[in-house]
Length: 476
Length: 100
Image (cartoon, rainbow over all chains, first blue to last red):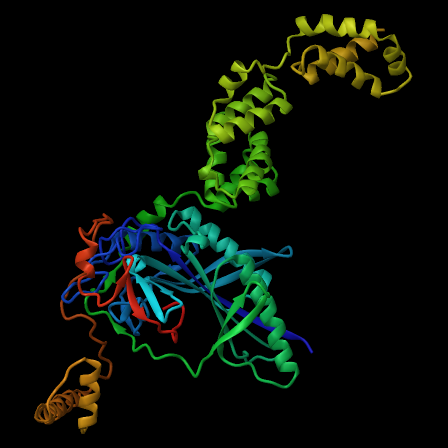
């Protein structure tokens, strides 16, 4: 029996503001508990929320970048629930009139393009952090209370875990390139909840959905959905019924574990937030924001491939993060050959980042230094072998490549007037190699190159040496 | 709608308030009157009338994105019954949706 999966995703992005959504408390990651809070975050009697303008601006940027329709009138609502990390006993969110609706993202899976709809996106405040202790107590830190969130709710248009993975990758890239969020899952600035149901192929009516919350990596999303597909199929094939429930992914076992069975949707008693007036978004402001949108990853890809002439694959690797793309652009702007810059960035730089588990912002190599080094390779000042030493020095210590090459006497010897006589002497001293060359033994030239390298302590430009040797040998 | 003494006692307990028997009787009657008065609203014909979200005719008052540090964590912590290392210490509550 064949089954069809239906998958929908809800993704929360922390918006990159300096202060919180309804209070001027600073937004920061990793601060000491309860130090980035004030009376508004604590919901002291008589305090009133005041909306941060940048929250709307950043939200509208994401809406425009995902082809979503920004609603002309939006207002906030109260979602009522009681929990220690939520001092007001309600969350301010947008339930009835969200920021935007009806967007889409185009993904490509197994060579096929597909549009995934965005049902809506709304702005809300984050709750504080509740850490459970082993002693029957929890410890509440309200630093995160009131941090602005943008929740992007997809349509249930995805039909397998690969599509969900592709959607998340694309959405993350789009949001990151707008600059609206850091999209760092490890810091909680991007969080993913999934909904999945299955039904027999050909059946119109959707199956019972299972929700999985707070998945902390794209790989976990893919693995948990793949496991859940199989689990639900086994339940149905054995004559059982899938329960409306919330499950969590256990990364150690690769399985999903039941957390709670839902009796029905929780009643949050939503009603319009009386302390914040509705907002009429002027089209002129939307136009202004659209004008200011940074170059999208798709526009950059087109530029890299068409203007710079690099391979599509290389462009995609560079565009995995905005930081890496910005670094590449800066290196090319500083005079680096686009193809060489792409190669160095995607192999050497990325290799170093992966090996040391750091981001491009954490390294000491600057785009200008990379460009300087590439120029020296291109004009023959240094060999690619020496370039690797120079690169290591620059990325680890931030050393200027040009200065380092000069100080260490690493400049490659390319001067024909110096290399010419050396080549003649080496050929004169090795008649057997000349004989071998004439008999079609290619290894002979390699031996002669090695002799020159030995004499110059590896500083001779192999390209120039090869040219001179070929010319000399042909003339004998 | 009839409000019972049990309901008043329940709301009082939730509000951490303690009342004498005579006060409970008084509040039962008063609360009943308030609820009945509110019930009169149900008789109003609201067909085609948009819901009232605001009674003032004004736009959202935006704030510029400028962070301000509150002077003192200690001041905010004054009302906290139990604390530990700058955290608010509360009894564990588990039955909650993770995204709340």
